[in-house]
Amino acid sequence: MVNPKQQTETAHAGSREFLTFTLGKEEYGIDILKVQEIRGYDIVTSIANTPAFIKGVINLRGVIVPIVDMRIKFNLGNVEYNEFTVVIILNVVERVVGIVVDSVSDVVALNSEQIRSAPNFSSRLDTQFIMGLGALDERMLILVDIEKLMTSREMELVDEVSA
Image (cartoon, rainbow, N blue to C red; front, side, top):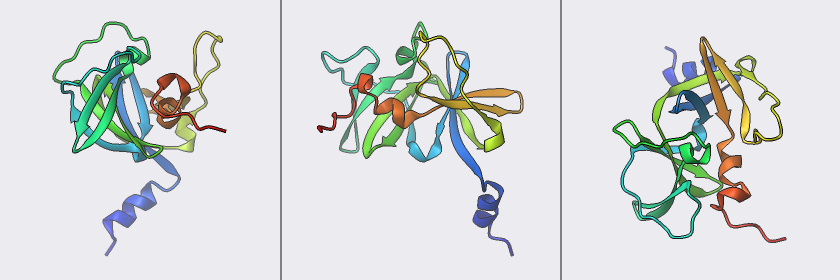
């Protein structure tokens, strides 16, 4: 008898899984291994003197979690919160962080042939946090290096390491 877990692992050998979510009209993907949980959007406690994209913090079972609104971070225009708005709780570099997105779609497995390099744009567009583009049937996913983004200097979420 075939073990279902082993069968899944064999089917996905050589592929990576991404949690897909939407921001505006675009679909994004992040490494599923960085995702701790998915929650509905709830009221956050604002913190003075933080960048606009940091909505505040929540208390998640005794852990204070900063919440980043990805729509504001990516300059996607008018931000509205509705019943589909969710917070993806991430575990990056031993730190728990939440990101607000419009909605979560699904988990997809992409093999190396389905992941294309990020295109080169003018220097005005920052693509350093895009690991590539995922092609899945008719869907095009913008694959975000969420750990690189969350630990970047501009996010101000992780203390700088002193030399």
